[in-house]
Length: 311
Image (cartoon, rainbow, N blue to C red; front, side):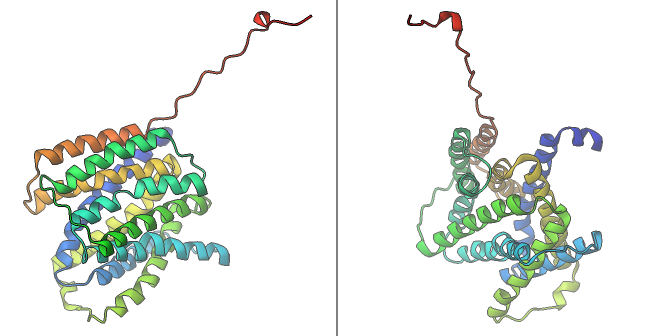
């Protein structure tokens, strides 16, 4: 089986990306339960620390970098970890969760534009059409039958900043980490995510309750977020980038809102409307449309015998 996957890198990349978005779409349940005890910054810091330690035990090999490479990993830790999660979670305190979900779901199109101008992947018409179809589905899924439009400039701009952070992280990761082992790359990124997340947690001036960590529910949720949601999924996402490219991989992010409401239906007994199901169909169609390769135009070679010559 593993050998078959190696022989089909695109299928492998799609499986890695699909598994990752399924987990990421489910992590909100663990986060929601942890938020009853801890602040978003505290949860972020603990999950990154757990992931870093686990990856160090899995691969206890040092990553030797130049100071320029180290600076890139600092940016990766900021854009893909601490700053991304901070802006996204803070946005939720100023605007509706539906606003945040919809705006953050625009990260793939931001990534495609950034990769076009700064990366190595050209922006294609299929990417735009896939975005329009999938984004329409995202709106239906997030609203889930209840259309509420309430603009909040501060919260919406923070959500937009989160989407921009993810785009920067994606292009940086594809551009600068290709020569390193994905586990080592992820470990270093999570290290700087934890380091840069520490000041954010300290500035909250909120005590960190240690006693709840001994309860199975709290410990289990933290382990799920750290080991699976951060450690394993960031490594698989890194692999998917290498196999599919940054733009194609990020298109799978459109699926996260639907996965979230499905998880909420089973674990939190939240309902799913028919419009949300229609949104899921549109999202799937948009993702497939965005994967379409550019149409190769047939190049015609002129027939010399049909050319007219002046004598």
